[in-house]
Every structure is written in C-alpha cells, then in structure tokens.
Amino acid sequence: MPPRVRTPWSSRRFGRRTATAGALFVVVLVGAFCAYAATGVLGNNTHTVMAGKLYRSAQLSQPDLDALLAQDRIACVLSLRKDDPPAPEFAAEKDHLRTIGIAHANIPFSPCKLPPPDSVVALIERFDRGPYPMLIHCEDGADRTGFAAVIWLMLYGDKSLAEARASDLSIWTGHFSFGQAHAMNDFFDLYERTAHGQGLREWVTASYPALYDSARRPATRAEVLAHDHN
Image 1 (cartoon, helix red, strand yellow):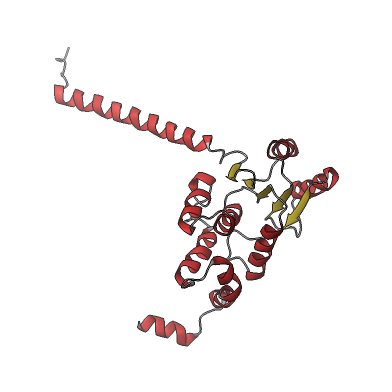
Image 2 (tube, rainbow, N blue to C red; image 1 turned 90 degrees about the vertical axis):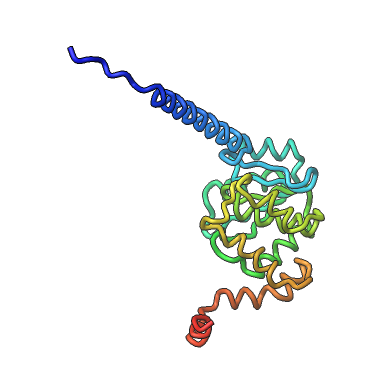
C-alpha cells in the first residue's frame, strides 16, 4: 500500500478560504438580486413619482390595474405604447377604462429612438391638463415611462435633471442606459449640452426641433471629412 500523501497545511487553509469567499459571494449575489426584485422591477414595476399626483407602472393586468386605480384614486391613465396596431392587452385596457369612466390618453414613444418634438410637446400639454392623480406606463414601465417621469419631475416636481434621472431613469426602475433604450438618456444629454440656460419647456419648443432634425439627418461627406480631419 503506497504511503498516504498529506496535504500541506497552507494548501488546506487556502482551500477553506476560497470556499468561504465563494460562499460569501453567492450570499451577496442572492441578497443583491432579492433587493433588486423587492423594488418591483421584475413584476409590475409600480412606483410613486409624487404621492397624490403621479404614479408609474408597467402594463398591468386588469385586476392589478383596478387595484391601483382604487388605491391611488387614479383619474387618468396615460399610455406611452404604440397603438398602430395596439397590443391586445393595451386595447383591453382602453376598453376597460372607458367602461369604468376613467380618462385614458395615449402618446406613443419608441424607447430606442430620440422622441419626436411634437410627441414631447403633446406629453407636456397632457401633463398640463391632467387630470390628476395620473398613472403613466409603457410595456415594462422602465424606459419610456422613466423618460416621461423625469420630464414631469423637472416641470412640476421642482427637481433638477440629475435628481429626476437618479430617481426615475435608473436601474432601480428597470432602465439601463447602456442598452437599446439609451435614446432616453440621449434626449436629456442633448438638453444638458445645448440648453444654455433655457428651461426644459422652452428648450423643447424653441431649440429641440432643429437639434432633432440634425441628429436624424445623415452626415454629409464634407462633415465626415471635417470630423476625420479634426
């Protein structure tokens, strides 16, 4: 029988430390996931933007929508989803709200494209009119909904752009700026770079249309060459 090879004490200690570190990593990872899930992002993604005024969510089932309408006394539901053609659950929402006498509005946006100026103006006008309390939503309640919530907080909630983005256009409400929905961030980045003291409302009407057209226009050969030269 060959002699038993004994593992050096330092190797055994290293192995135990590695196992302990691995276990701690798993615990931290599970804890982080549970904390993230607790925000509601993985479910209905419902959040209060300002109590008594504005609420946000994903597309809700009828029972969940009815519960939220009753809980927060919602007077108007504003959808930011496309309606041509409408998704079945979105069409059902409109019919249901019409039946129970709750105001419904739709201003469609794409989460992957800069928002058209006329759509942003329509959104602000809808916010001006109300009625409140209002619920805003898109499909997942993350990108387009976060975009609208930031605008509302800046215009009506006395929040700076940085404060509004931190609270309502972040991973904690399901938005990832490095994903396909970076256009929502691009809009506010463009405002920061070009406002030069203009408030958001003035900038949207006076400056944004030309900036939007420029951003969507393909660069000319001369512009490309000038950029390469610089």
